[in-house]
Length: 252
Image 1: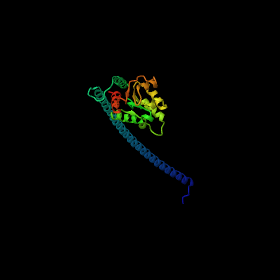
Image 2: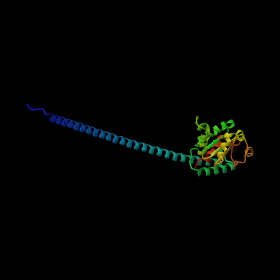
Image 3: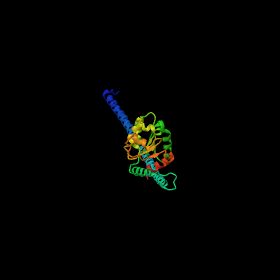
Image 4: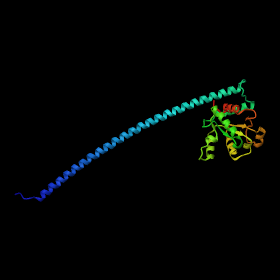
């Protein structure tokens, strides 16, 4: 009977263990490679999806920008046509609405100045005193917008819950011209109207509209108004004044 060799037995056990470890490690390597390949494949699909999505977004943005540019071109063309038609009709002898000579000079001067300014969000900022000018201001703003004039008007433009003064300052900056509806309360020197008028005086295009006051009243109020030429509801209806202002402020 062969004698049991413990050393040989232990050697074989260790060799068997090494083979098992190598097999386990090989299996682990295979699993890791498969996982890496799966991850890389997934990442490639994600990148391809992101690339396609970015391409779709860029195409959508391009189409949107093209549509906006086309709309702006059509709007500018429409405004030029409206302004030209209004100017022709107001200067026509057969028109029921007529400029006086000071009004015509004011409209020509305003139109020249507005045409030289870069387009902004609003054609004009309407400044008024609520205590006695709200009804007329609301009607004037409605008439102007019907004619295609973009008017900054506090009741519409100011968003509740945000700083009123900051929103008003933004409107004053964005508007290419100003309209001051001068009423007795306006000439009394209220804080908001004084602030608005001060900002509007920095623009080259300020159109006074007088309601229940005279040019003498305005002259006595302050000498800071550079030109007393303007429009007055004592001579024209709000609709006629709106047509005259629109013909002046809409870029040709």
